[in-house]
Amino acid sequence: MKRTATLISPEEIALQREYCTRILEMNQPLPEKPLAFVDTYGCQQNEADSERLRGYLDEMGYGFTQDENAAAVIIINTCAVREHAELRVLGNVGALTHTKRKNPNQIICLCGCMMQEAHMAEKIKQSFRHVDLVFGPHALWRFPEFLWRIHTRRGRIFETTDDPGSIAEGIPVVRQNGVKAWVSVMYGCNNFCTYCVVPFVRGRERSRAPGVILDEIRELAAAGYKEITLLGQNVNSYGKDLEENVDFAWLLERANEVEGEFLLRFMTSHPKDASQGLFETMARCEKVAPQLHLPVQAGNDRVLKAMNRGYTSAGYLDLVSRLRALIPNIVLTSDIIVGFPGETTEEFEDTLEILKRVEFDALFTFIYSPRQGTPAAKMDDPASKEEKAANFQRLIDLQNEISARKHAAYVGKTVRCLIDGTSEDPRNNLSARTAGNRLVHVSGDPSLVGSYRDVTITHANTWALFGELRSTEPMPAET
Ligand code: SAH
Ligand code: SF4
Image 1 (spheres, helix red, strand yellow):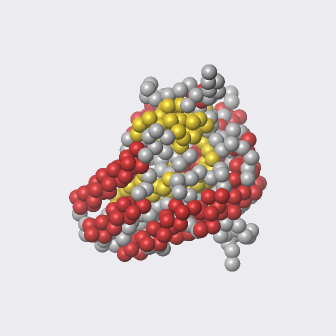
Image 2: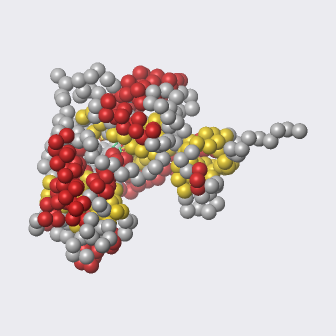
Image 3: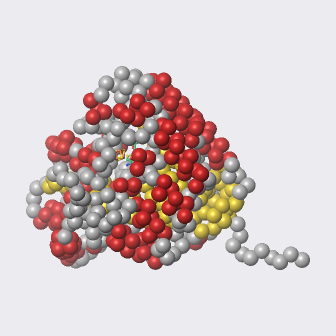
């Protein structure tokens, strides 16, 4: 039987917006607009969540600042995927004791995945007493109510109850970028890869209704957004929990029909659910970028099984060859974990092997980080730190060589790019992206940001391409 996702009722969202109005009425008489500082760690889903928090804050009459000292409200949206990110958050939150000492009325809020871990919320309660408000991803939609309570009553708020998760529509959004936008298509994860904390902190898979997603894409396209990325922990699970008989390939095809000049990207695709139908849809839809992020994690079958990934290296290679048969110019990227508990150096050689066989355009590489409560954290982990670090370095060296070679193949070609931002480098003051999402540095007029332009690639390195804008003026007639 299909599970119907818990939709937060429109009345409940309306109540939250009423809290926004009450805070707005409190803020309006102030001589200057109070400011909020929103800091985001981790994945694009967190970026998208922060855009909703900014939407609420904007409705409450806050402006935005990058300076913690100037902020009346500080929000740190945290990530729990690896220990490294958690330590950075704790360091930065610790440093906020100074800003709060200077400004005792400052309100400090922590949210995101780290706060949904019971031991972490407890640590904040006991050891970070300057933090006023803590809430997990499940309670984000109630942020206005929490902030109102902090403003009007004494005491701290901790709202981190475990929850399978819900869907909240109708929260205002302030987007960070006028060219590229995120659209969540689903939340949560049911896969329980043995190393991963996400299913514990983000709840069960639940899909947004297709009509709501397509309306959002239509609005973004009409507002001139040039790149729309559909988000989910595993977008290939889209629709499994809905009454309608729809899947992600179907959604992508409908999104492709939306009028406008924009590219569609999506992430993340789990290899075990990546279907031939999805590849065919990608090949057929002209707005869908020739790019796929398909995390393989490891190349050894015993390790993949211990990770509970649900595919073998041969199965993965088969996916890649079928995809390349349909979309020869596909840009492929992946995630790799080095040093999963029990992975021997001999088993790690299979990861290098898969890199050589696939030749990814780029990789996101991680050393395994034990996450409390996950099955892998209880597995024997005999490999030394040094052995893992040495293997990690070999991985990086091999990928750098592959990326440099793949980038070098662009030199001399003219490719259509989206000019997506400016940069500090005076020689290359603009950044751009190929359809496959490779980074290109160019120089040109900043007014070009947000437009598609042909760029001739002049040189390349491991990390990026460098090019010259082709003239947009008509060529003079030959005499
Ligand atoms: N849902 C996405 C990714 C979520 S986390 C997917 O399945 O692809 C992003 C990446 O972080 C993962 O792909 C994995 O490579 C890495 N990761 C997750 N948990 C980790 C851990 N405990 N240690 C090291 N890397 C981890
Ligand atoms: Fe984590 Fe696996 Fe779910 Fe990705 S698919 S979020 S790696 S459990």
